[in-house]
Amino acid sequence: MQSFPAKVLLFGEHTVLYGGRALAVPFERFSAKWVRRESADQRLLDLGDYLRKSKEKRNWLSVDQFIEDISNGWQLDSNVPLGYGVGSSGTVCAAVYARYARGEDADLTTIRQRLASIESFFHGSSSGLDPIVSLRNSPMIADASGCQETTVNDRMLAHIFLLDSGQARRSSTIIPELRQRFETNTGWRELVRAEWMQPTEQLIQNMITNEYSDELEAPLRRLSNFQFEHLGQLIPGQFHQFKNESSFCLKLCGAGGGGFLIGYAFDRNITLQTLKEYNTYWLLDN
Image 1: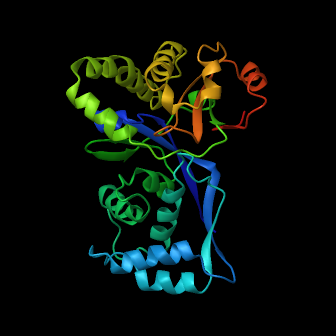
Image 2 (image 1 turned 30 degrees about the vertical axis):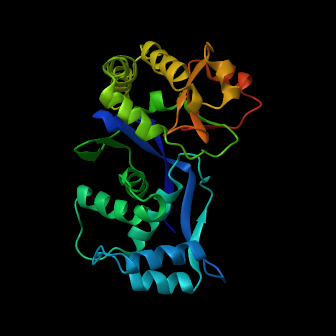
């Protein structure tokens, strides 16, 4: 049966809210798929109840059939860690849409909006990016105008890994606080554009072109140093010792505050030795 992969937001965390671009990729190491069991999943029943009672009309979704199936034991078997920034709720929404959407095929923008309306059950509001990556099992470029499928350079992707912080993300007001600061503080806005958004855009552009570039260390170091220096509260304390590590650099995975960190290895063997006490998950196997 079809599985629905987790997603990794490689670059563009937070800054996509400021007019930049973001690049997200599916990660099949973690996924969800439909299974039949004896008991009903109460969380999915709650989702069905939400969809049925919502004022938003969802003629494109067979909500009654969804509720009936969940009541009869259909549920999602998932190994996607909760609160880790890899789209656990997005896999649920993708699985529900894939099985219960009805009507004619819709365009990507419409599908993303529909997925966002399902994911609002989990988050109150949603961009729809996580579930669209999971549903299409494809890398996506997102910005303020929407999203589109893209390809990524596998040679560069092979250097990237997830580092398990050992703790779920804590809820935080940091996202609205950072956005307000960006809008009201000219000095901070200029710093963000120069040291966060500019290297982010350079890295995204390199990731989606077919040309492998060895000139990635400078923008990666700039991005990593900026986040350790100015967003250090979102990086669990035990990982600050790796700020100036020569064999790899670290950055936020999604909003930050726990869950996974994203690493980029300049030397994979030394990186593995240095991080041998931690769990790491490489986006591509060698």
